[in-house]
Length: 117
Image (tube, rainbow, N blue to C red):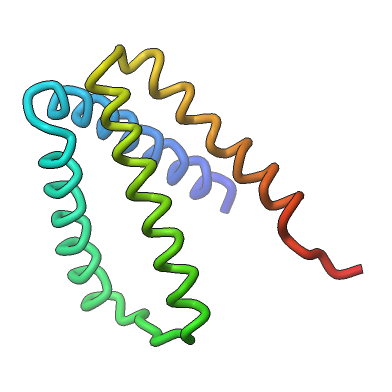
């Protein structure tokens, strides 16, 4: 099992690293809006195809959809600022700063999530 986790982690890092570089190149040759729209349209198409094959869809509650909407909004704002940063400066500066999002997520979880006693 540990080897699978390692392989998935390495594959994810490879994909995200390639996406960082591709995003920087595309953002510099096109507009951030066009890049954002294109990447999200592709994500929707691939996501729908995955759901059709995996058959893991569940409807969810209204509260779940509200959280999904909030996360989507925050993600969109994050991508706009990320691609704008890649367009404006070197990937070697922007990407490591963005990688700090894990620390931010941990901090927010500790502060905001209610833990059972």
